[in-house]
Length: 337
Ligand code: UDP
Image (cartoon, rainbow, N blue to C red; front, side):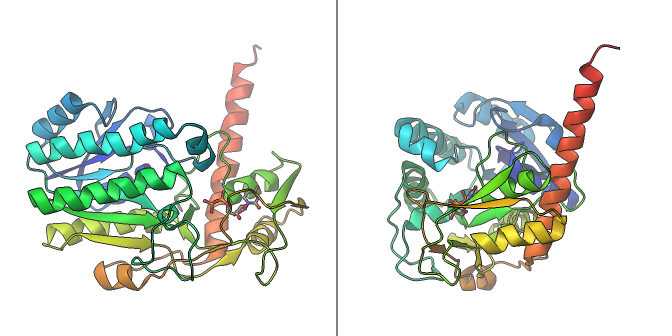
């Protein structure tokens, strides 16, 4: 039994590959390396460089490796980009999954775990948000993921496939052993920006909006440590293998921190008092996004290990320092003697 992980060289994908490999699973990865890094994979895991939409490639990998389950991460994830290029997002997210599913059906691979997102909810009427809340995405990114969820329901009904769609809230942190982390250049995520400021790579951080009707006026998010999210995938796989029914599950901790609280945590943990600038609201931002986690806790055998903002910050900071150190070392090596 081998698990095919698409996008396994990316941020969340590579943490999941590690979690699976550490648990003794046989894993094979397809990744086009557009945002991923082959060095993020353990040596024991074969990497096929190519597109998850390439049916011939996927078919060959499934047949040659005895694949019994697919975990599908490959896709595009930048919300503002999706507003500029909706068709690109429908291609990379919705159409790619359609191709992948058609191979899965043909090859009788009937366990499928899908990276979905809290963006399918749009602006929630109330928080914590349960899975049955209305889905009204406000970006092509969210729509492309919601369309894929709908497709999964239909394929499951027609072909007996069982799926788990995991709706991620705000994913952050890095491998506690500092082997892998978020290495995307130009990432816009709050915690990434904050640790870049703490390590001197930015002069300051902007707080987008301080006039929201929240306790300190800034937005509130539910941050989940990437290693806990990886474990949720491993647990979802065990659930499907033991005969579990298809399920759509929120992935968060069910607790919110404000933007200002996150920045203060980075200042405290790093001991570096970088500048904070209060700025206008960022267009399109949702005020408060917190997961109702009752369903995932009742469905999967999953106990988060890092439900602690300081732990998330500590690991994100250690990873950022490592990235900086590695970059510095390669720059020095590039200078002729
Ligand atoms: N944010 C901020 N300054 C930054 C980056 C993000 O104030 O430099 C805020 C952003 O406006 C939002 C929250 O942090 O309210 C989380 O943003 P992020 O882009 O990390 O994730 P999102 O929840 O938008 O997917």
